[in-house]
Amino acid sequence: VIIRYKSTLIIPKYNVISPILQIDSTNLIAKYSFEYNYKDESGNNHNLTNYNTNLTYQNKIYDNCSVLLNGTNGESYLEFPDTINLYNIWNTGDGLSFSIWFNMNLNTQEYGRILEFAYQTVKFNTENEYRLGIMRNQLLNEINIYWKENTTNGSATIPCNMNMWNNLVFSVNKSGLWSVYLNNIDQLINITFSPPNRTYNVKVLGRSSYSTTQNLNGSIDDFRIYNKVLSTNEIKIL
Image (cartoon, rainbow, N blue to C red):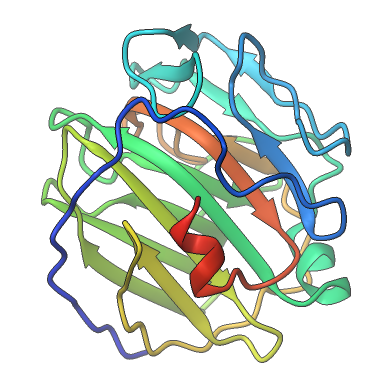
């Protein structure tokens, strides 16, 4: 696995009012803007289940609200429904893309998760062989994206400032080639790892699948899943 770093000058957007990249009825699988609720705005009804998070007007990117996660003992997180299957999205479409706005507080725990998908025989036990995650790298100003299938994995680490809004776009094309953009800057990741044909039973925002301590303290806004690789022009207006 090759990991490449790219220095990133971060120029975030704050409290931007739409229009942004508009809803795509063909390729948009799920969209969560957290406008007074946790519903999927794509029309596909992949609504989130809320566990002790709060919608806030104080710290946001688009429109009226973002979701605030307090990072306490794995008790504050959001869960995707069983209807979200990453392999099927990638395999039946033209790839897979996540776009997420996040503001990670500096006191976020070591390896604090923004997102994690995992397969475990019992949910939230200590098994960690099969998972996809986006997390803080140790206690550094970096984030790590990893996809692990037993002993095979892809992993990329990129610089990322804390205590400010960042937009991350992570894509996997039909050949398994990764691309990562942070705040509209291509991170030049040279990794190939295709989504495994696996049904994850843990699908969460803001907490670890196997630890109660590796959680996100911060905010998330405008989270999207697409069944294609987003173009450079599309990423510019996310």
